[in-house]
Image 1 (cartoon, rainbow, N blue to C red):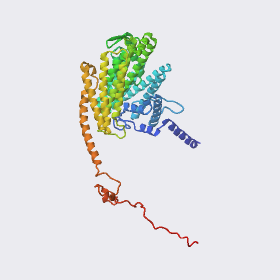
Image 2 (cartoon, rainbow, N blue to C red):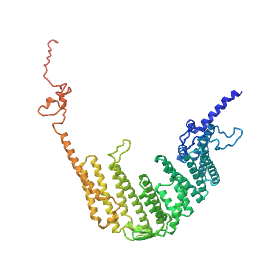
Image 3 (cartoon, rainbow, N blue to C red):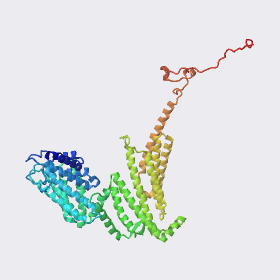
Image 4 (cartoon, rainbow, N blue to C red):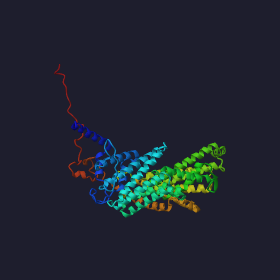
Length: 590
């Protein structure tokens, strides 16, 4: 009977392994050959044990759910790996009938997989806490369970640090264990809103990782520097809650430079920035633009105007094109919301509605404060859109210059037509600026007209470039002359308003480039005309007539000396010839 029952047990174990493992063979290989820091064999007592703690947890998190924020999947992976490690090390917690707790001690520390066992315990408790943090948004009672699991994770991290104090563990693993313990301790104090203790733990973790990054090569230091960047916003947030008011500015800059917030600090940081701007907005009563003070009573508009300078500064400091584009889109979205709030107020204000009707009928006069505020916000929106399109145009121009240096077959290469579309949008935005009510003064109209001339010149330049590509030389030459005309008109009309046009593209550089392009275009046109004349010469024109029909014309045909020479028409055409008459007699029939 015992022999009959054994195959069932084995079969059940195999099924359990297939259900829990997922990719069981690969994960078992991880347990057989863990990452060793010391580079020596870990199975022999007395050798130096090592464990790449940060590398192991980062790789495991990225491969098992945390790339998409799935903490439950990562917790399941930690549980399965713990089970496999205990089975491999024969470190069982009793049997199926009775649980017997066992702890990893220094005496049995003969393999670095014992350290990995404690590390997976801490990671499982931490991932469960983060899962409960996501669920606590709708179920506040789960916050108590969240704190309990974080305390459990800190307990396992302290046990790992105590084990790494042994002489059998190398120095690098000891430092990583201390940094890991400080990180989890800081997160526990952070959730308990014990800001001073959390800041001390995060600073300790940051110091250790910075020392490790400086001690190794650049490739190995990338992981440590990433962890330092993750911890920095937490430290500044703790400093702000302790009483450092300057920390909020650094937090805003971190958020804007990254193009948004990520991680467990995201919600708290967003609410903090909103609250800070709301407090400042309570003291903001008016805004001054173009010599006129306008009262601001709408809270959403106040918050937008307070954050406008920070957003523009972050855009100016950003070098990454994708991040800059994201910041532009975020700023435009906030501006649209502010404009919508002003429009709703305009609908309820009879004075502004009456003045707007007069403006539609053609009467000019001073607009109301609310209408002028709407014009100001619309000006910000259109100006931001112009800056965004100009930034995209500069990036495309760089790509056009580098196009001849590196040609990628798989990627779509930029063309001058793409730039033409961007400058069309810019000119459309400038036309909308001229129609804003309350901005009928001469200086504004003149500045906008000069900007229009500059962007028209650049638009004509890239239209000419597109004609050059299809070898339409005369059209391109005319457009180059038009570019020079726009540039000269702009320089003539600029006068004293040059300071307000400092942010525009350099017109003098465009003039120099157009003159160079004109010379190269004329040379290319002459060469193209010569080649056309050579191909159309009668001595080289091939004809379908055979040689017997064009003996009076000299023709350079290389096919005449080949076996397929066209000498005569073959077979010859049919020609009519006279035939013999047919005579019939009627005498023989009679």
